[in-house]
Length: 153
Image (cartoon, rainbow, N blue to C red; front, side):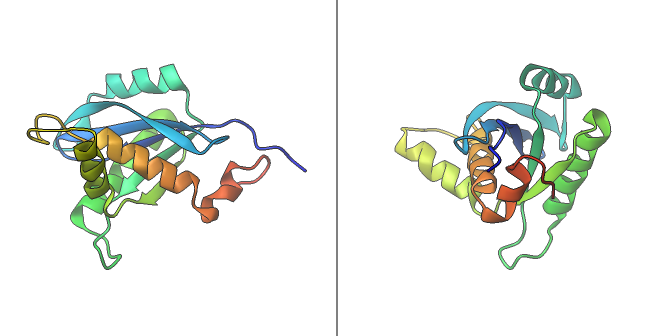
């Protein structure tokens, strides 16, 4: 039986003002939120992204895709896909799309349980959403094959 290699994964919760970031590892299927990135019309400071990539050296990138509730593409889902393509263009790492429906809602519920108060604009939960997205992606049986040694998607 092949053992799963330890893989580092990085997820992004794309937004036009903030981009949430989380880091995870495949052995336990868990992730942690990292400080989010400020964005201008969906464009981050690419030097900050470069710093994250150099610091964590992820094997896998995951980008949350905000589909409509009926599963169709939205303007934001197309922009999130464009962001994933930009990550690939800049860093040469393939990225995987993750259905992120209701992840921000779940992150807000989680934040409220932890005592979050005030404005989500001033104190966003995007990186908590990225953590939820990444853990969901890692634990989806469809993606398990990608995380096993010698297999690819």
